[in-house]
Image 1: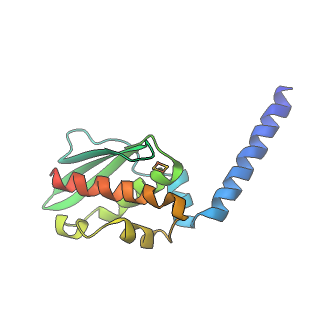
Image 2 (image 1 turned 135 degrees about the horizontal axis):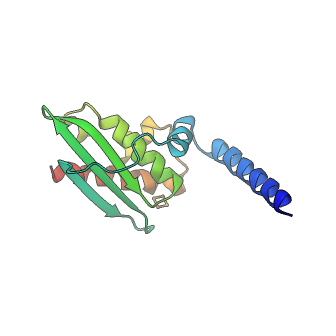
Image 3 (image 1 turned 180 degrees about the horizontal axis):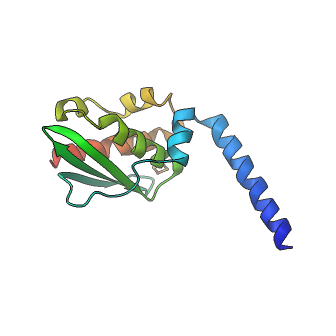
Length: 138
Ligand code: FES
């Protein structure tokens, strides 16, 4: 019984991953499955937390050095796309100046990730809105 349940779980997981790969670009899937910047930074120079209309929250932590973003990390309790977008945003901004980061909005992010299904575009906006608020809070 336990073996057949495990097999069913494995099959379902495989199907979900295959469906995800069909619906999202490789960069989204990679950042969703293996986020490199998930976590917090103690004593950040910039920080913001926003809860979107979907009820999910993204937190962003920034560390500055020589007027550039030295490190950026994020946390989210949201969907897989919010994990991907949070991770891609933190990767995009490392080494950039505040003025450069101010140019990043949801459209910029969508261009960098090969787009999203329209139902998920708000996840990208949540990530970039949180970024812009963190920049304001520096
Ligand atoms: Fe809420 Fe994606 S559904 S951030």
